[in-house]
Image (cartoon, rainbow, N blue to C red):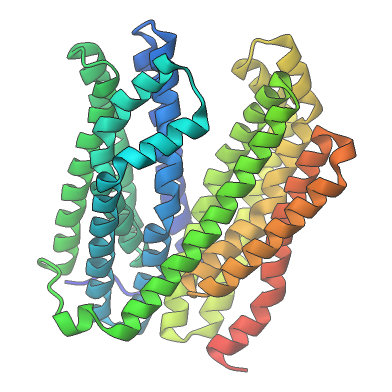
Length: 440
């Protein structure tokens, strides 16, 4: 038994992919909240700070390897569109092999990675000790975490978003429960929080592989000649390379924003952090529609159905814009209350209110960029996506340089310019890529 065949592109199909993946994304922030609440009950600020810093280190580390999920979605969706069941299996196995190699490399290089991360963080000795207690356990989850990226991407690529949702939510819920039990119940401290994550990732990988075998009617056996086909391997390598560069550029943009906010002082840094958290919540919804675009547009390219591709682009943009506008309105109406709930400092509250308008505008400014990222990944236009991201990053830095006299307003305006540039550049490039892919 193989995955379901791609159907016509409708509102229902787009929502059937986007909404489950949005729910899956929304469970992720609760991990940090639960870890903070559990470790916070130990009464040691250094332990709480250590877990928070370690979580950031792993978020940044694994974000770099997000290409394993995104690339797998595009490759699997196109194989689905071509009705190439052999390649569907091969995409899964190749991805798992890459995840295994990269995961084991991270484990082998754990010491220099930790040293570099701690040097960049510049935290106290007590916090660093807590970080290492957490890091020394969770680093062994790397191969399983990366394998889960591949499995989730494979299910999404084949349109099996219900299974992807179940796996993601299952991993996160198990993680939260185990962390609480091991920290507070077993008394393992910071290491207990990391052990909860390790066990949850292992369980998720085992469950994911079992679901893959059930979907395929058995273990995904693939002939060696197919698995190591030079053309497919080169395609996979270039796709992953381009997505990784694109992701690194995106990480730099966010890190640069945070660094410039820090230079403006503690109050501005805290206010920006609150507003960025609001923006990230809206981004989880936009990510859901980007994921829908990956699957729908990828399968349309594989099936050579230009009309379906165009419908996928249009509906992903339409629904994404609707949710972005809704988020903007909600933030304008309830933003002050959200700010007050996230900080009790009068100065931080006042500062955040000044810049609240940007938190409302950013989802609308970024909706085109999110949707087109999904389109480009699904169509495997990774080289163009990479180049356009680098061009948008240049726009961002130039805008920041020109707007420095405006202070924090200039920083937010530069970030708005970055998101708009990404979307506009991708939209301008789209017609040529469509002609190249489908013909005139």
